[in-house]
Amino acid sequence: MTYTRQILVEALTSYTTSFAEEKNFVQQFLDLLTHDRAFHRDHLPGHITGSAFITDSSRSSILLTHHAKLDKWLQPGGHADGDEDILGVALREAEEETGLKKFKLLDKYIFDLDIHTIPARKDFPEHLHYDVRFLFEADQQEKLLITEESIDLKWFPIQEVSAYTSNASIDRMLKKL
Image 1 (tube, rainbow, N blue to C red):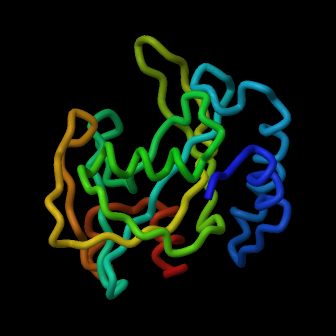
Image 2: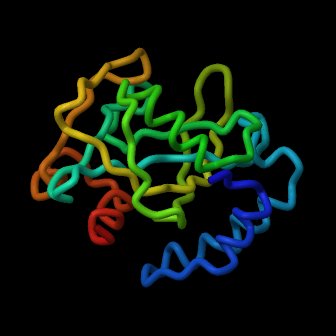
Image 3: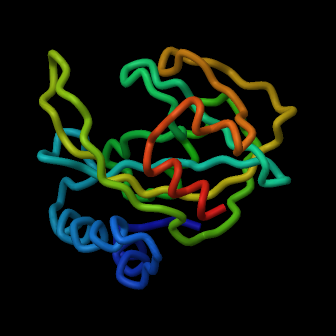
């Protein structure tokens, strides 16, 4: 399935959630998507990114990456770089950041939405990531590959995640599982 800009707009328009913060994000995403360059990392004050929330077949563990630049445990994901197929972006980022190749998309619909601040770096100002997340399944036995984007990769039993991250959006996604 290809997630075009129009399909993303339709998905956002019909998106329902019980989480207040996500309800507030929907209109902000829709406003951003009126800009031609919304999928480009140089679009400021923010741009669309895609992420993969990866669980195992038993739904008892999730795969997180210790992000090198942000020094936090997060789900794999990243910039669209002009690619408007945000589901494809999430899958590409999951493959690039984990080395895994066998993913099963568990739902073609958006799993989660988040808008979060990325701190300034020497070559780029502080900005926002409008992150569209999809739910995937992968095999814990498949070999992980740590790249320059990560300090580490690890499958976490769900009950242990809070010991490694206090990220509210990861907590929200865990509740959705």
